[in-house]
Length: 167
Image 1 (cartoon, rainbow, N blue to C red):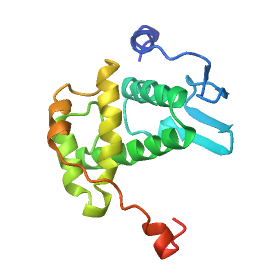
Image 2: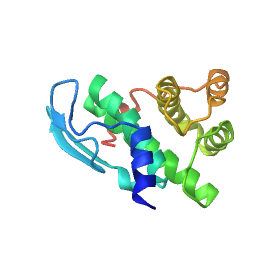
Image 3: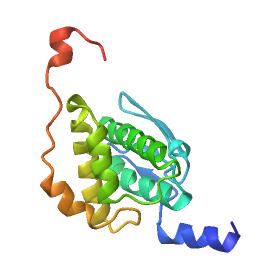
């Protein structure tokens, strides 16, 4: 990839050098590894793990940057984990990197989730709605009507406490 192409990609999605979490913790969102402690939560997000081209990874960074600045560190870390699992599964099914998220990709992912794990699409759905609202590349506008039609159940509440399951 030429320097001109790299510059073009970077200019499309502006990611600041330095940002702050909602609680004021400074971090460096242009880096591929976000590693810092925000209050009592250790944040570790390695964007190189995403099976996606550079432009798509930058879009993922930009959307998660919004969450890091506006939501709790735990919630942001959870979104990163759910999105990474989603990308990995989709990449495995496509047998290639994820270049864009389409309604077909979302339906296929929803279909492979067990009843117990369908709630994970709920997290991704909220993130995708924010993604489209921010007009970032990588998600088809056609995903919004689909996500409005699908009934996504929440996760089972209290099960870990009742079963004394630490995970």
